[in-house]
Amino acid sequence: MIGALDHVGIAVRDLDAAVQRYRTAFGIEPAHRETVDHQGVEEVLFRVGESYVQLLRPLGPTTPVGRFLEKRGEGMHHIGYRVDNVRAALDRLRDQGHRLVDEAPRPGSRGTMVAFVHPKAFDGVLIELVEEPG
Ligand code: CO
Image 1 (cartoon, protein in one colour):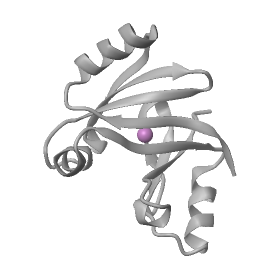
Image 2 (spheres, rainbow, N blue to C red):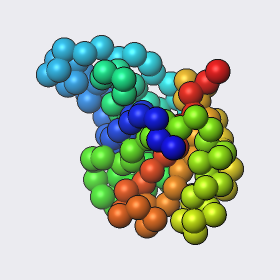
Image 3 (spheres, rainbow, N blue to C red):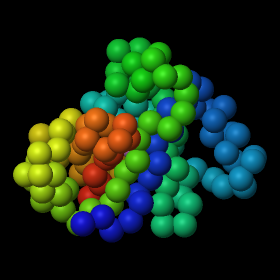
Image 4 (spheres, rainbow, N blue to C red):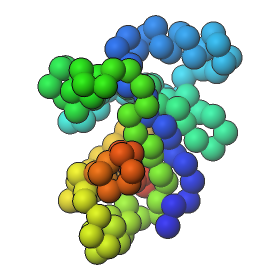
């Protein structure tokens, strides 16, 4: 079902500082920057091979990433797995009894469709299913 590791999402307080650190330390340039209002984040993607590192800044303290930062501090927030069909993947997990965050796919960045699976379902790791556009 999983085609590839799409991205690793990392919660940061200062997005510009984190972007600059990645540029300088690893010699990579941002591939994409986007504010996703309904998810309450501004994100920057660095392409690494076939995958991305996604730096996330919360748009406010009551957003999911804002609450994560408050509770856990900066660090890895979620893993995104690339799937052919996010709705089918979600149905499969629901049928197996896994706890979901999203009952239906919703728009992510870059024109993707995404859905989150509850971290309690997978060893404390928040999983995002990602379907590429087209
Ligand atoms: Co993500």
